[in-house]
Amino acid sequence: MKSTGIVRKMDELGRVVIPIEIRNQFNIMEKDPVEIYTEGSTIVLKKFEPNCIFCGNTQDLFDYNDKLICKECAEKIGHLCDEN
Image: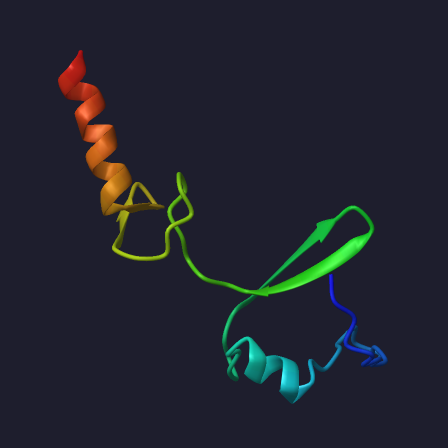
């Protein structure tokens, strides 16, 4: 993890402003969804990008039963049925 040397205070509603330099670096625009998760004692913010539930691919996705699957994984799953 790389330190930026930037420190921000949290406001009374629990909000923290992400500096424009960091938003630009990660192409985060106004109204973009940001994912929040933890790793041990660290809070991680990440620009949310929908991805395949199996391989993590972000290209050629389609929805199947409210889950995103890429074309490649769907083809692999289809071949599993052919093998039986």
